[in-house]
Image 1 (spheres, one colour):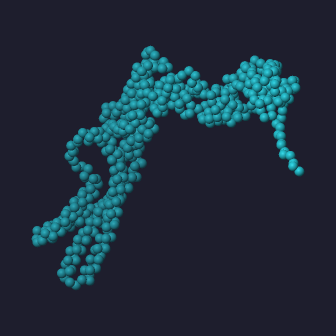
Image 2 (cartoon, helix red, strand yellow; image 1 turned 135 degrees about the vertical axis):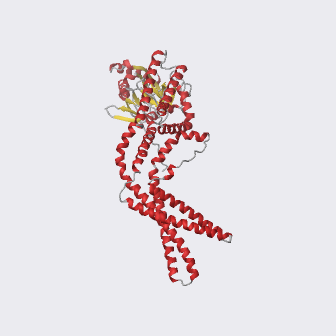
Length: 561
């Protein structure tokens, strides 16, 4: 018994392979983030010195602005000074953080203890998949940090020319100015812009230094991959192998139990099983599917690998969302499997232009056309939208069988040598093959000659035999045809022969010959037609019956001259 899981295996395998790669990239991250030592230390020291100087200047400015805030008289001045103080506090905090991170070579914020917020029921549910999300976040941390640094560098590179231009402009004004009061004001403004310029330069240098370290550390990825692969297959690789082994064991036990049910349960192998046996088969499949899904999850839980466990939860959630949309159709498939749906075993359906008998309904159902001697295997899902009906005696299945001779509506006559769901092949007299699509073949309304056939031929005699044409001539012609058929070896296959007066035609009295032959002579259909015509002409010659030809009489009016 083949086990068919209720989801698309190729799609799920792609997801599993992608998720298995997450731990590989995440663990390699640790090796990537190792900072090489060398010439970069000199750049670090220079950056630290500039940050310390900037830190001292910012603290001095904050102290000076604090004094100005206390002595300010108007509310607008206080508001303006307070905004400048807030900005300086932010710059000082950023400078302190950059100073600590560059000196330590690590993000100190990651060491801080953050109080876990309270979760509601929905958040508790999503907390199960938090390890997988954290693993993916850690995997992309290196790339995200590089992107943030590049954005930061681009931002400060854009602001740096503005600050430099402002310092240059104010310096030019100071050189040209001769007013002492204006010079004092311009000097304060210049000090502010110089601090801004120093801050922008320090932040830009910090970001560029971090980016250089990250890009330099990427060279260690190849070296770290080999050691990580060994570690991965010793830890998570082992857990995955155990999970696969559990799945194989479950499938093996399922197969053995199915064979045991076939052997020991009476009627389990019958062509048309009862509802109870079908329900037992369905429960066996459902239990097998549940065990196949939950088996690896149990392995990950026992081994306490919460990353793989949460990845399994993600897969189950994806499968659940997919099944939620397809649940009504799966319910119809269950009804079909239990043989209580719109299609039932032993009945007749119409599919792909042909009638079929439903031989067996299963995950893959078996259909058969008994006349055409063809069968096909279809998914149970393909039967959901169909309806079956009981088979009645005399129901046609196909107009012919293999080796039958047929006459098609387009005049083609041949022996059927092949029938399939897609094509029908004929061989004509002389050996030529002609192939039709099955739908086109049926559209030709094929006349099956192999089941017995009738030939109807007409011969005309002149009007001077009018009295004999309805009395002695039909009997005489019939006797002659019977004698000729017997002489040529067709008497045993001539089932019925009738010779009758047909009609008074324009220039002849028509006698019709109706001959029914056995289907064994189907390949001689045209020869028999010619033979009947020949026998009729021979009878006319022997009995002096004149055969007329079509006459045309012209009536010319008399001349009055």
